[in-house]
Length: 113
Length: 114
Image (tube, rainbow over all chains, first blue to last red; front, side, top):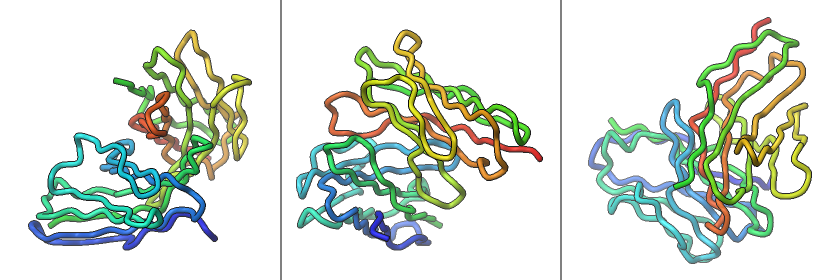
């Protein structure tokens, strides 16, 4: 299966620690998106890349959050000095750009203690 | 700013009954419209999408939705519910010329009673 993959699937960390998540999109997709989903809510847009360029960041993405897509393939999302409010499911999606539909990965569930 | 409203955070139907999940969006320019389904602890799976053309779109698992521009609605229906349809359903819009990002509604949890 060559769908979107995310690693790790679950992450438990202590407040103040740094965490990094990885997303591998569908190989021919040039757009990659990150979303955050809290319990009982719909996903909220965080940021997106077209190839290696980060073209938009949501106001939700505070200074503690950084995302990269260095070679236009996989992407990483890092959260520094985690807070309990960062506990959520982090979803990655990719698209070809030619077709507007996005394909989602299984998500990384972050729990900050 | 664009927004999506899903009426009813929980909907319960009997197996075999009609499923109707409501979605309204705010936009002066018709966006692309989507319905996604999410099973527990999983990512989102696309059910169907509207881009252009026919306003009644058919998706997977017997679902369909109708785009009504005058009502700014994109309600999801299925004639006969199955137990396996129990899940969370999200309506989403992709605003015109904004890089394809999705704006989601808050979701509707569908329960199916035997």
